[in-house]
Image (cartoon, rainbow, N blue to C red; front, side, top):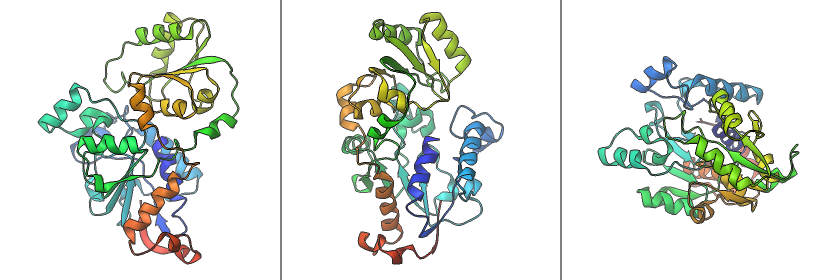
Length: 329
């Protein structure tokens, strides 16, 4: 849903001028065999996630073209290049950073050294397909991060990213709880990574030092297993699922994560934060706070890529909003 809502925010700045369509994330080739047999349910290509995305797009009254099969598209925007479907390679492509990328661990190094499929290292290999024309990133820190990984600097634009560019707005949202320590879990185990959940929870209780502990479960997590562990190792802790985490972050005394993009909300709001990533690095890469302008910034990159002779002033003029027959997915 983070990917879907980001794409919709960008499209809101294009819908008056371009014919925009949407599709849930999909795969092709032999990976599609796994997708069709429901063996990728723990990924963004799983049916549960795709159904939620489609329901949201319908509720917003947006055009849906599942797998991009209905039209030929001049431009495609996507939040992931771990799998790049062949039918979008005919189009110009803008890749938009979704959030934090996974750590560069042993699997990442093996994937790069042996040229194995990128998806084996999860989002650690984000941006390394080099199959896009433009990469829109969260901050100057992430620009440097991707350049160090080998991404062509001329393709990178520091636009900020929707959903992480106006964190102060979460402070105005209602929240039931006050004066607590918030734990944001990860779906590491669901995505076949190691995690010592017992040690993580006990460490969180130590940091809380008697304050109320609230655990917000990752939406991709096995909730029954996670809740049972919380009751066993840190009794008295409140476990939450199916609620937005941002208002909780805005009200918490401290935020504890492992590998979660929500740590950037905590940093942007000046919270005491804990992460398995080095905090100095996280602060350097924290998404720029531009009062929600990132979607418009990315939309301008779309206009420039599709029609480079049109100036930004022209883009904002009423004449730009006559319908353009070119299609954007």
